[in-house]
Length: 298
Ligand SMILES: [Co+2]
Image 1 (tube, rainbow, N blue to C red):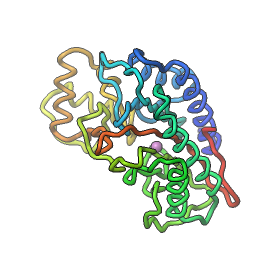
Image 2 (cartoon, helix red, strand yellow):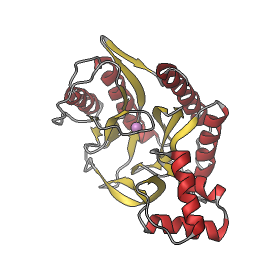
Image 3 (spheres, helix red, strand yellow):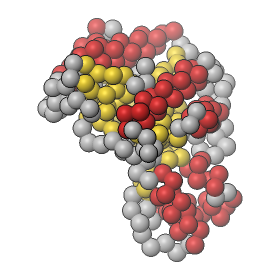
């Protein structure tokens, strides 16, 4: 088994490499499923595994959309395209995101998210309160003429866990815990227009799932599917696309429906900006140190 720090750094290098490579492929008319499959394929080629499905979120969709099998959707003209990707190496996770802006009017949102992220990173060291970082993010956004999404946060990560408890808010909310040296965090400011409602609400399912609990199942294929899901993805989110590849055809589809309806799996809803305004995102993963932090996805 690899040293945890080495595994985290390796996951981080893969994540930043894939993030920069996918940026140049994103343009109006490109199929969303192509983006998802390029990202996930490159992660595997480089020796990692996707820590969650590649999220491609357009305009007011802030988070949690990945393509279903045969997704016909393409990148719209003039849209704001967020790609959020996760890599794990032996369960150690790096999470990073970028926004490609196809409408110059919304470039300000991308800059606001990126600047807020940079300022947050400069302020991070052991002992800093999460709420302080939220204040720094909100002020950086306002200075740029943007506003943060109030109910989305960064998050601490642990082995095979994308959300391991503590959050880093994007506003000076009362998250009173202090960061500790050695903690692994993803920091992810989301920027929207100042006139927007500034919060996300649940939308339709985004084709992303996670194992919830084992239940008695009637179908033999459903039972086998659940065993495969538990051993392959453990406590990490996965795409229906990945399951459909292993269990193709209408039989596989019926088995998957049984897992969802019997609540063995949780289905993540897409997160939509309430007032349907566009949202930009920037994200890095970092390890907190005594006097600063090490950004692993730089
Ligand atoms: Co994240």
